[in-house]
Length: 176
Image (cartoon, rainbow, N blue to C red):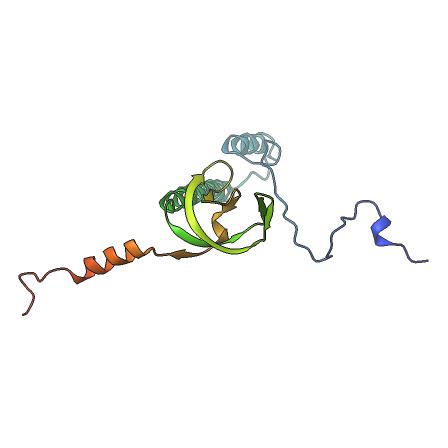
């Protein structure tokens, strides 16, 4: 008799067996080798080595250089995360007052259901709490992540200013 997979304990119940799941690892003292832990391990290895077959100097130098490389990569990763976060925050702050097209969620306004879909509106605020910045659009009570923006619309006053800037006046080196 076949077993119904939904009745097996430990099996996740999703609409699709191919649904993507996100696993995250947590760094703790038990699953991370710090430089201090490495030196303790190296000292124990040197103290307990077989005197008739000691550890070679080149092996020890290789291990130390690998540890230094891991530390450098860790520092580079943290630096990149920090730079990306700052870039996102600067971009989000610069979007205040801009008219955007975005994928909006459904919500109720004065008893009327506003359906989810593409909308256009002006960003009135940005929230930096959480993993990534979110924004609010005038007249929409929901907050959205930056990836909900599908287009940035240039307002007429901005377009007129840009046109005037490009026309300019003739300079000394210009031919007449």
